[in-house]
Image (cartoon, rainbow, N blue to C red):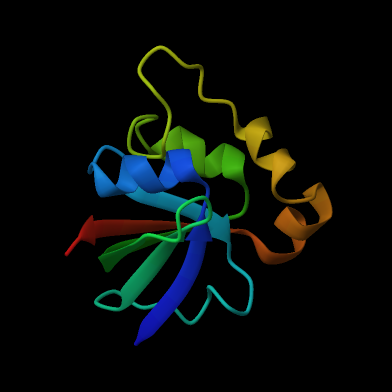
Length: 111
C-alpha cells in the first residue's frame, strides 16, 4: 500500500539524506493502517519534491516520552548538537491527541 505524508523541509532533507530514519506521528486512524513493507511518499511542503521510502519497522508507544527513550536522537531527526525533547512534539500535536491515539515511530529506508 502507498501512503502520502507531508514533511517540513528540514525533516524531508534529513530523511532524503538518510540521517533521519524514523518519522514520528500520532497513531491515529490514518497511520494505524501502515504496515511493514508499505511505501510512503513524503512530499516536501516547501518544494513539493517527493521522496519514496519503504517502511522497515513500526514502533508503537503511549507517548513521545517513551519513543524518545528508545531511539537515537539522530534517527528521529535531531542534530548531534541539539537536545532531544519530547515536548517539542507539542508544537505539532496536542497532549489530548497524544493521549487519545498514542504515537508511532515509522522506520523507513529511501528507495
